[in-house]
Length: 478
Image 1: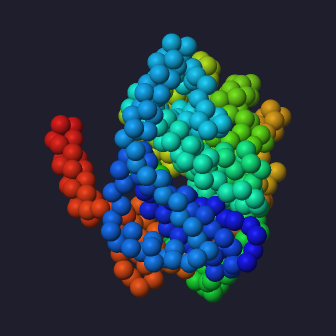
Image 2 (image 1 turned 180 degrees about the vertical axis):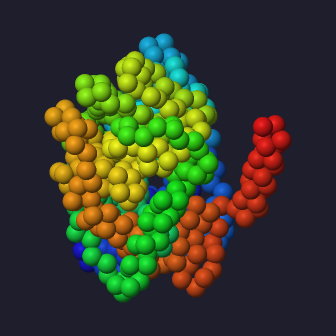
Image 3 (image 1 turned 135 degrees about the vertical axis):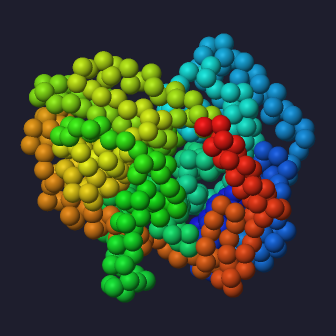
């Protein structure tokens, strides 16, 4: 038996659950001890389906696997609520995060990163945080921190967490860092039947560069790979990213949206500012640390050269509550007379704007890949997943000025497009327990569907019905 203990984590999320079962199955088969910390009942009662529970029990039956489940406690839950309220009031008084610790672990950065996703902006005042959002993440973080501390193994161990940015997995990683454990982070692969392992974090983009540049397809014939690559390119130009199984842009932003009626301008496509790791060491310092610094230099250089700069805000750079809190950070650059600013809710097509531009700049946006696909000179101000070649990196004022003055589709773009397309369409390690892993649940190798939550099918249908009614109502009122 190997000496290293692998520490995994399960919660009520089906992707986290499936990834943990896969890792536990693989590691125990290789003779490793596995400890699974199950927080499915945090922050409240768990409602996972009976089918999921049965499959988990059968899969984790090895003597090398030890599952420790967090039991729900009303007393602990009420205490956590009171602690959350006291910290919320303290934060409101000083209008910043108060010191938040649990079981010797500092939780401020983890809560800040998660709440930013709701608010739609990385920098915000504490007074902007709704109580229900703060309470939810605070209770999850503090309860999990104590549970992980109580059950963390003594001796050599490796923590494998999924995603690393969600509150529970981030807290587990924080405990691992505190004890000096090795860590790895898992994420979805190129399709729902695959996963990817990162040595640092999926939010540390230079980590992607090495994976993409060194990628070699193991499962597909060359003809199959070409077909997948071709389909991936077509899908991306239609606004669908198969790697994340997500439509990144609303259809109107792609096809039905307007253009400016002019050509030859410099176009900057903004990035969502909430895609960052709660751990500073996973945030790359290469290029411009934030897009606002880079864009101000871009606007200044455009002004010097008599060029119009069009800034197209990311359609999803607003909060989940549909409030645009990022707007205030664009006031400075909007003061330039040569800047044409297009907000996230304005009905313009990012693709049509790209077609009419002379040169495209992004910070960490994946849209740079699409603009290269369209044959446009494209440059990155930061560490985009596709921006590993120095030819397309504009990380200084001089490089920005040169790209504006003499834009061209750099020779490296062809290699970038092909390597990136291959990786994003085909990479990852196949699950051995599941054919596919989705938000609603999993499909096993025997084609059996296991829904994640109790009455998941009914809930999904009810939610779909609610959305259809809401859309019809919205159309009638439009």
